Length: 229
Image (cartoon, rainbow, N blue to C red):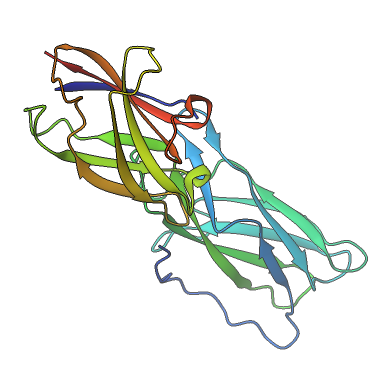
């Protein structure tokens, strides 16, 4: 079997050294999601954090950092707290720290804040979140279409949902095979080993769609094409 892939639609401890917040530092942050999806070639969902308890009118810098990397390795943003010490901060296009373009259980990143109204200014840890890829990977080995192969999928639209694979020929909607992949974790990651080829094992070009639920839902699926020869 050979394949071509196209797209249609955890947390680990962070080994970072940040200064412990003093009693005067009371900034807290609400991270908008436990995981964010990166679409290869298209960017990543914006990471949005609601900030409270900052120094009214003071500037700040919020950074996203991968374990073992320099501060702000995954991006940063700056702004000013309002008169009540609140702010909304957004970091765009955070890539998975691992650099992988394959399905991921979730790469961890730490979110920190520096309030320039505090002396001395230090980077305070607000929390952590995960970055994954919206992707589907079907192993090209073993070569026999009758053998089980690894199938992996990830993406936040699949988080906490039971995922199924549907095999069709070409652009047909007739389902030649359906199998369970499992329930997506917080980043929508699930994996299984399955015989992907239809039961006939006939030569031809096929597509594997993956989506939540037991019925094929092409608009809300992710797809990988393969060929039996």
